[in-house]
Length: 207
View (cartoon, rainbow, N blue to C red):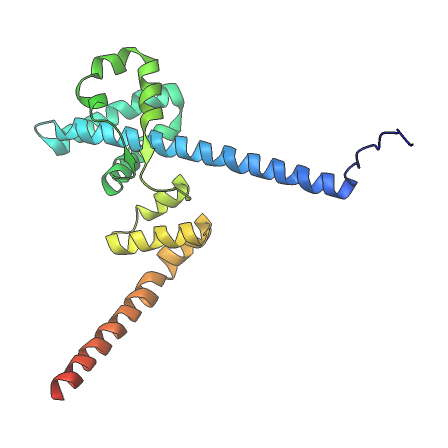
């Protein structure tokens, strides 16, 4: 009787390489997604705080300019030019247009402002408590481009197409600003559908 133990078969070099690539690619993708979600949370939350602060003032227009200018100057000194006035206004628009992107217990803003100012663990808990209402598959740069779209239906359509078809930011920029694909294709099709329904209704009425 042969009692020799059979050694496990080692993976081929090609298989090991392919498996390693899959592990690296998936880990990088997860890391990118985590960073992107954190960035979106940060920008959305900053926009929310600014909008709420400005809305509480008497003369909102002038008060808002002062608040944004002052905060921007302070943040630029500490964190650099990424927090210039223009970007702060982008954050405010981001929150206004996508105010339901994340959910956050209102108690974080109503009851614990003093705690938030003095306790970084409180802010960590607040960020961790934020939940997106639906899977987010597009980046902050995509949202920056979408902020330029004034038509709400068009903006939602571009966001959906970007997410489902994995549009790059360059593709989104081209389809949105340069070709106006939503206006040319979607609205044109909608017009044809309306004409078809109208003609169908007239035909049924004549019968």
